[in-house]
Image (cartoon, rainbow, N blue to C red; front, side, top):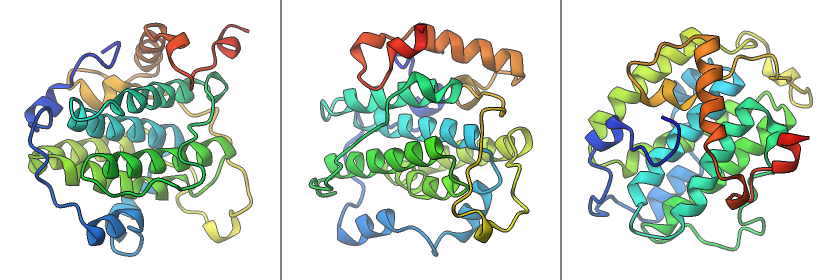
Length: 243
C-alpha cells in the first residue's frame, strides 16, 4: 500500500465511495462532534491506552476514511490527501513536515454536509498535529471527535465498527501508551518525547495480511514516503528530508 491511490478493501466494503450524502448534519450533530468530551468516556479510555505514534497513525487512517467518503464531491479532498501524507511522514520524523495549519482564524463554519465534516476533520487533525509536535500528554483526547466523525459519515457503520474494534485492540496490545497509569494532572506542562516509539504504517490499518514487526513497519512507511510527490505537497519539507 505504497500510496493513497489504492483504496483499502475495508473502505470499499463500507460503501463509502460514491455513496449519497445521506447522513444527518445539523447544528446538534455539529456540536456533538466539536465537543465530544464527557459523553464518550469508554472511547476516551480506549484511546488513552495507545502511544503517540500510534495515535498519529490512527488519525491518518481515520482521515483516510473521511477522504474516501467525500472523494468526487469536492476538490477539497486533494488538501485532505496532503494532510494524510504529512501525518505518515510525521510518524517517521516530525522534522520532515510543516505544521498542518488550517483556518487559523476559525472563519469557516462547520455547516454543509460536505464542507462541514471536512472542516471538522481538518481542525481535529490540526490539533492532533500541534499536540504531537509539542509533546503533549493529552494528545489522545483529540482523537475522539475524529473517530466519531469517521463513523458518522460511513454508510455501513457495522463495517467501520468491526474495523475500529479490531484496530484498537491491536494498538493497545502492540503500541501501548507508556504513561497510562500516571496522574495526568501533573503533566499539563510536561513534554513527552515520542521519538523512541516504534513507527507504525498504513498497512497496519488497512492490510489484513500485514504482520506488524519493527522491520516490516519501517520498510512499509519508508516505501510509502518514497512514493510521495514532495514538491506537490506544501506540508512536506523536502529540504529537511534530504539535509
